[in-house]
Image (cartoon, rainbow, N blue to C red; front, top):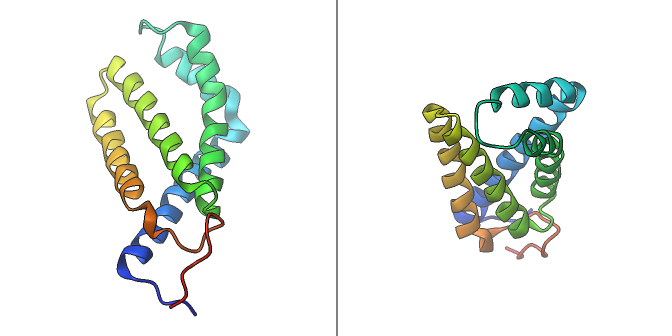
Length: 136
């Protein structure tokens, strides 16, 4: 069995946690995609965002989250997947700011910091398809 350094273990567990979180967003929303889309359309009706843009975003978001989650769980294209996750969080922060949902923005900033840390320590990635694990 491979012995992981603390930074490598922390990175792998953090990557798996974020991957599971993103994948579950997809799996939970998939059966009720129409309701999710309708809810976002209603929620953003008073913002300056055009309705077709909100509808497109609401349709695509669960699939993007699912793809990012799967890539992170597999450790495949990890760095680009983390950059994509940060892009998703930036778009969510934008939307939450437009809605003036400051508590939600705070939560999303926490996600952003978590993703930032994973990007910062990406060189510790192990148990992944990106590269061969370093022998102990």
